[in-house]
Length: 268
Image (cartoon, rainbow, N blue to C red; front, side, top):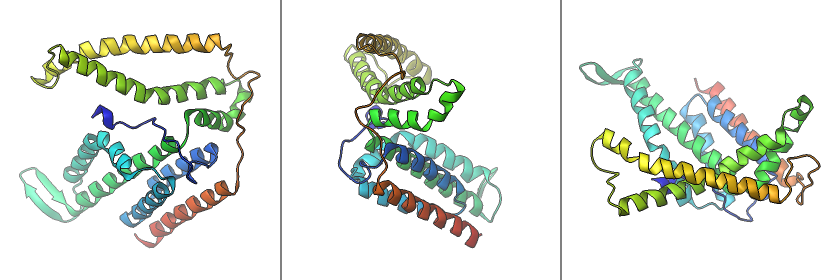
């Protein structure tokens, strides 16, 4: 399961999506999230699904990786669907047993929420798959630059968010190594009662915390050795520029957003 977590991974490429300005990709990702939450029926969600399919096809990211990114959220999807399936009481009754019942409204709501969560994860993952951590840092800092007038440490905030995102795959890999080492020493992490499994996590979390603090200290030392002093007086080797591709991407996303709004109005 740990190896299935792909959050924070970057896949180098030369696709049209990779070449987009990272600032534009951030804004369009937020627009896509708003788009999904504005959808009020399955037809509108279908438009969001079509947007994801076309975007992934243009990015060149393998479909297998898209499916892999969904595996960690399967428990969340199941819990959400079950809650909506049995606790939404409106609509025609399809099945009933004692206090439990499934209605048409509960079924439709469960399917709707599953589709929304899945598309939300897929669309958001595309940002990290096609944007390097350095570009993501520059984009966040640039978009938040107006807050500098309010004495907000924009550069430091952007750096912290990007470092945290960058080290998620590293910590997952470290956790997997520690678990394998504990199993090789005879620890039974997957057997026993729930309390036994919780106690079995202690020998994993302690080395993981120690390793995390060690990595943080090494990173801080490396930054100090390179005379890092935050964003003050900092220049960039790669300047951010918008091109015709970014305009096309913005129009493309806005058209899909408009399609969802139109379906919300036409289909009640």
